Length: 614
Image 1 (cartoon, rainbow, N blue to C red):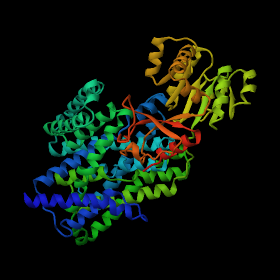
Image 2 (image 1 turned 30 degrees about the horizontal axis):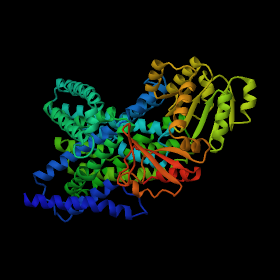
Image 3 (image 1 turned 180 degrees about the vertical axis):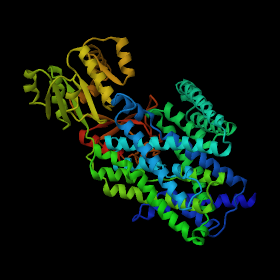
Image 4 (image 1 turned 90 degrees about the horizontal axis):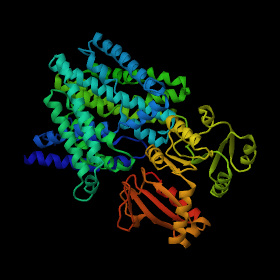
């Protein structure tokens, strides 16, 4: 027990030191996971042999493995699939169909290559290797796309969708393969249905609990009820999977997808907490232990294994590059090649599949070592190749698209122009078009109820859409058309009549309704309660801006660390639909919406500062 505890101390110290060493090596960008595996090799049986794998370490390593699969499920963006299906009028269209074709071709080519390995006596059976080389690392794809700042582009979404689908289907197929290998009984496969039934039940329960007031009240401080619920969920699904004779990776993965389904942008702080727990403690133990158990001697005892490793690395790229040629239908050769290279990156799932193969006795230590080397090579080299081949994309600019051009719109545009914001107006009345051209950067003449007219404008996630045609029915029709075909976070609908019931339905769909009569009441109330502040804002002595914290350097920092310019003030923090009056000791969290007030230049400076990535 004492030796096992000492081993745990060594491993946790390495988990702390490895990221620091990797961060200090600027010339070559090595994933932290690769550093952890290499550190494990150095202290393990292939190196200094300092580690004795006792019951503590085995449990923590196994739970780290399960937690890794749980976080893989957490990364599945169902909103992306839903939005894509909606945008492309069904599941079997466009991006989703392309992703299915890419994965199907990957499986086919993987099987052909695995059969060649069998013919040349490098493998005894092709099935597991088919699944192993079909994997893709979502944990590499997602951060790479975010870093390149193309995750919200059509190209980035197609890549992400392909990785998501490959991750989910390979986990499912590996589970089915493991069942057939261990029991050979087809009825065991049907038991997977029970796991999915539990998935549906717990998902429904999760929605009920996550929306309850008591859950929100216990979400912070010492209770951390949502974190506790997440751990309970992962353990329930692991236990259920084992009881049903199913690989725990599927149970852990499904537990993660439940959290992903019930989480929204406001609840993403929970994902960050779970990421911190997983990548801060459990997962490094698993990867270091992979290195500890890695037997490097088998690589030197056989020339064939080196040949197999080289062939496996080449195969890992071929099975992704060939299917990626589908990208050529919509993208350039550089984008097509870079897509193939990025989808070739493998990490957690390939190691998970190899671990299962080793436990089932399907592959030996030498093949396992070759697979780990392949994972290390592809997850290090693939992002570099992607970065080299992928062309630079222009960032989605913040813009305003206004549909309609009445007197109210003219006044609005004049006010907005002082901000130097890019404004586009869509107007079908030819007389109004002439006047609009004097106000906006771009004017499109046409009927906005026609999708082809809307597609002439660069409507993206950073677009604010104002719908003000003067006809409430037409306004609502345009809003529905936009919601069905574009990804827009901020839609403002200017209606002449106040229909509370209809407004509630539109609000639930993410559309903000403005009614002139209600707006006038709000203005009068502000003039009565805070006349000086309101006049300063309307006369533009002051300006305000809302900033949502995402991937910011300031997450987990105190408000006192913000170092705002003298002409700026943090007015409020909105978190989980609750308003927080900021104090110096308040810590900023992922997803917080900060309201900043000050002079125009100072507010823009603070916005850039807060949006700075870590």
